[in-house]
Length: 103
Image 1 (cartoon, one colour):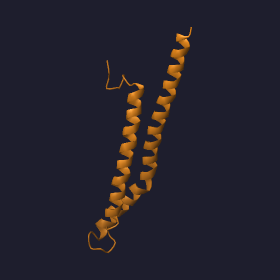
Image 2 (cartoon, helix red, strand yellow; image 1 turned 30 degrees about the horizontal axis):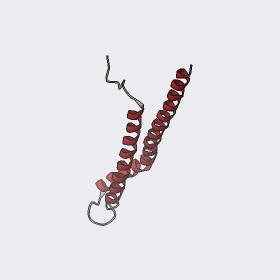
Image 3 (spheres, one colour; image 1 turned 45 degrees about the vertical axis):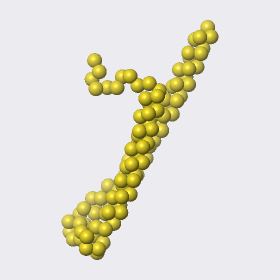
Image 4 (cartoon, one colour; image 1 turned 90 degrees about the vertical axis):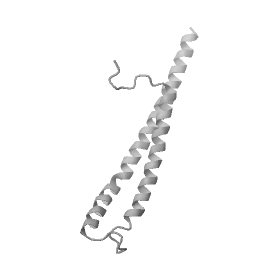
């Protein structure tokens, strides 16, 4: 029974997952930078979107923006951890197989 859990992860798949996380992290940064550009136009006197509602939207975005990099760093750190753990386990696995075959 699988229960929705991934049970057949090998070293190559772990490396692929890590690479995908890093790619998605970069996409998040690019999207965030685009949003920052758009939000810089809100309630700055440009006339694009001014007023109380604009101030509230801007405040919510600024709150999100203040924590975005912490979240993004966590994603990147987790991806790097998966990659490093996979590489280390693969080395240990290979050394164990070599040791057993040498008996």
